[in-house]
Amino acid sequence: MGKIYGEDVQVKPAFPMARAQKKGVSGTSGKGLLLYIHVPFCKSRCHYCNFHSQAFNQVTFAWYFKLMLQEIELWGKRLKKPLLRTIYFGGGTPSLIPLHQLNQIMKALDKAFTFGSDMEVTIEANPDSATDISYFRALLTMGFNRLSLGIQSLNDMELHLMGRPHSAAMAMQSFESARKAGFGNISVDLIWGLPNQRLKAWTAQLEAVSRMRPEHISAYNLTIEPNTVMAKLCDEQEDLTLPPEQEQGRMFIYGAEYLESMGYMHYEVSNFARMGFTSAHNSGYWDGSDYLGLGPSAVSTIGRRRFTTPRYMDEYDAYVRGGLVGEDHELLTDDNLLKEMVMLSLRTSKGLDLKEYRKRAGFDLIKRQQQLITALHREHLIRINQGRLRLTKNGMLVSNVIIRRLAFDTD
Image 1 (cartoon, rainbow, N blue to C red):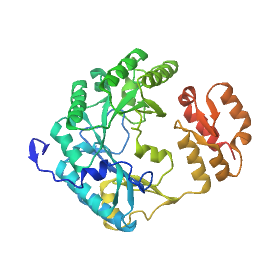
Image 2 (cartoon, helix red, strand yellow):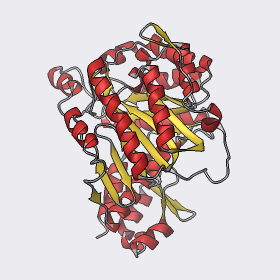
Image 3 (cartoon, rainbow, N blue to C red):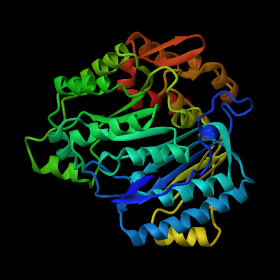
Image 4 (cartoon, helix red, strand yellow):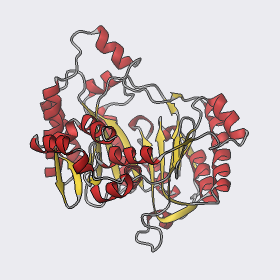
């Protein structure tokens, strides 16, 4: 049973749980398409957010829901029912979708695509819209086996500053309910580097979250985006300032070291996981795997083709109803793909495979960039071993600059 806006709703499984949770089936591991479904609805826009989303209302959601089912069917036919490695519902706030309609989407996906036996199925949820144990049990019944919980902070003042519609207590309750329901793979999202935040407050957050023992933690450095409420607040209030650069550096380094001491592997600039719980979906992006994005503003890359779904509902309607899915696309060149290989792989702990780079580029990166490589190594920003170039933690602090130099200054 699931509870939606106070109503009890019977949810029948979209597909057997064993198909989503069984591990180690031959012929499926590490193969298949990554599928992302964008849910562009929120109760309210967070003060730091510049992603495409809109206020949830029943009429617009019903429009979206109908088009989503059509888009799923179109892609299933176009790609001839491809094998899926992962499904990821992101947003926006996917936990705003009523359970019976979420179940219909899962059934449509099962009909249009081939589900891998070891498929990771993730849904993002916000504590204000996902607190009831019966809700999480219904998700498990549908086949979701990974939960990404948007906690962001366990400090009520920080949550208020960010415009989050939940409290720290609600966040704790949501996590505990998911655990009691049976979720064994929970990721927690946090934001650090908030205005007036300091190292002590950030480490206190990490200590509190580590006591909850989530399997995965995503810790993102706040970026003030133009035309957001946060940008306006910082402009108007002189006492509201971002932590100094040196303080942010300490927050990143000490925070990462603390999480590692608690058993979390720092496998990507902003992501930490216990052994066996890295995100298969996000890791697929960083490995350069093909991915299909459904819903308004979603991006897809299949082979050399990259395309973006229209972001506004009227355009999305025309796009889907006209059968135009995927027809307008950018053709990625060898140079595009090589640059993306550098940008994505250097964000991860695995780093850049220098032999593969040489094979694809036709030259040795170390020799071509010898002066830069020597300088980066001398400053302890990179390390090279076992044929891979990796960023150190200090290197990750300035990863954008290093990646830009290595990816774009080789011509």
